[in-house]
Amino acid sequence: MERRKVQKVGGSTYTVSVPKDWAHEHHIEAGEDVHIYTHDDGSLVVRSARTDGEGLAERTVEVGPESSETVEQVLRGLYAAGFDEMTLAAPDGFDDAQRRRVESVARDTVGLQVVSADGEGVTVRSLLDAADVSVQQSVLQLQFIALSMHRSVVDALVGRDDAGPVDSRERAAEVHRLAGMVIRHFNRSLSDFEETDALGVSRPVLFTHCRVAREYERLADDSVTLARVAESVDRPLPDHFAAVFADVATDARALVEDATQLVLEGATVDEVTDLLARHESLAAELETAETALFDATPDADPRLLRALDAVGRTADGGRAVARAALGSATTGSCTDASGDVGNTGETADGESAP
Image (cartoon, rainbow, N blue to C red; front, side):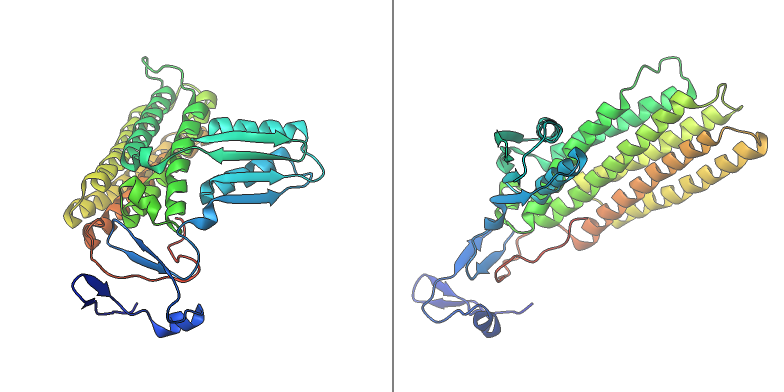
C-alpha cells in the first residue's frame, strides 16, 4: 500500500500521481489513457487496460466423454466463479445424459437458463441482476429454511407426536441454491467492484455474509444426516436420551440464530464473546450426553452417536458465525467510505473465497 497526496489543479480538477513502478510494469507512458472506476465503498480503482469485470462475461470449457456428474461439477464451478455466460463445448458430441444433467442444473440454480444447445455444446446464461438481489434477505431466508428443517428432523428423531414428514433432501437443496447465489456474488466481487455497488454492500460485508451462507449449507447437510438417523435408528430410544438430545439441539440452533442476528444487525465484542462462551458450554453438554448414553446403555445404537456429532457440528457452525460477527465488530463498520485511492494492474487482487 502506498499513500499519495491529492492535489488540486485549476479551479475544479483533482490529481494524484500513480506509482512509477506500476506505470513501468504496465507500459504506461505520459499521455496514455487508463481506466478509472469509482465505487460506493470509497475505492478509486485504476486499471491499465482491462475493464472492470471484463473477464466474467463469457467462458467456454471443452469437455470430452466425461460422466454427466463431471459435467455438472464443471457447470456448477463456472456458475460459482461468477461467469455470465458459460459454454460447455463437446467436439465429440454431447450424449443425452450429459445434456439432461446440464438442463437439470440450470433448473435448480438461481437465475440460470439454457440459451442454446446443439450436438456440439450447450450454452447457459445467468439472468440474475445483482441490483435485484438482497444479500441480507437471502441470509434470512437461509436461516429460516435451515433452522426449521433442523427443528423438524430433531422432532422426528426424538419421536414427538406432532412431528410431520420432512423432505430433508429438497429443503437442503433449497439451502444450497440460495447459498450458491450468495457465494457467486462474492466471487464476482473479487474482480468486479461494481458487483458490490449493485448489491448495495461493501466487499467485507459480502464476505461475512458468504461465510454465514456456507455455515448454513453445512447445517443443512447435518440435518440430512439427522433425518437418516431418524429413519433408521432402533426404537425405542434409550431412557432420557430423547429429552437430552432435544435440549442440546435446541441450544445449538439458538446459537446459530443469535450469531446470525449479530452479523446482520451489528455486534459488540462482549456480545460475541458471550456466544463463544455458550458454545464452550454446549460442547461440554454434548460430551456429557455422549458419555451418559453409553454408560447407561453399552449396546446403544451407534447411529445416536452420529446424531450427537451432527448437533456438535451445528454448534460449531454457530461458533463460526459468531467469529464472523466478531471480525465485523473489531474492524468497525464495513460500509464507511475512507476515501483512500486504490490501484490495480491487469487483474484485481482480492481475498480467496471462503
